[in-house]
Length: 295
Ligand code: RIB
Image (cartoon, rainbow, N blue to C red; front, top):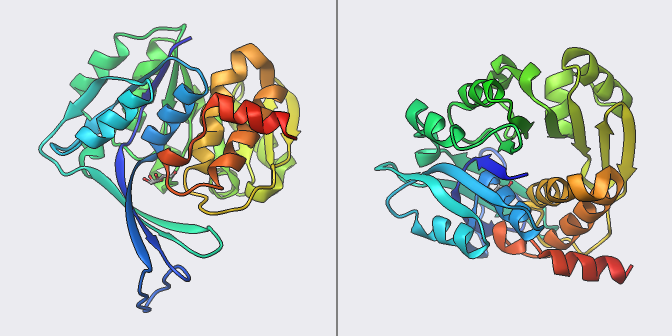
């Protein structure tokens, strides 16, 4: 199975701060670093590092070479990325002394996806492939419709959550990957059982991967519930931990099954939070296997 990720590519401007700035407050940052990021790019790299065959579709600005090279250097096919006149998407990220973050995203070139590009890309894929989507590009609803028409299985990570998502054809989604906030915004519930119940009733046939930060991750797959706790590591920067989890889970799912994929994904996310930056913090499969052997 090939993985097609139609997703965002961002330059992450990461500010190290004592605490994340609150409304009306001015705070001095201790440090500024630039990293390749974006939920789309991070997830493509995580899938590829975990061993999947990955194709990234999206859009960058004229100075987007650094983002394309980051994908290429990690084994991701970039032939479906368009270059536009728009500035690159970017994110302003504050990381506090506990490794927690707050993120402001500017869509830029990520919002230049056209119907022609969608058709050109999807025509190259079929029902034996899996499509990954997040909510940082435009035309997500159109991509869902057109992929579904071609019987391509769709994995949707509704992040960052916006009310617009509730108007997408969510009944066409095979897998929802949500954290507690996104699950609450979609279902109005905070309890795991109730969240699964609502997804099951509203979107029958869909599977759910629910990540709960330090409380571990649940998966509801074909009517069965699975759980894996987190691995405790020293938290330096949580940026891209969810993206890493998603990539390692789906890269291994078909060969290893749900339980082992949850374990591998939890280990990968544990390593990611102990390293700075988005894509640079994503471990290789070898590093994850070594980490698991040490447990
Ligand atoms: O999930 C982390 C990502 O969210 C960052 O890399 C940033 O670009 C934002 O899109």
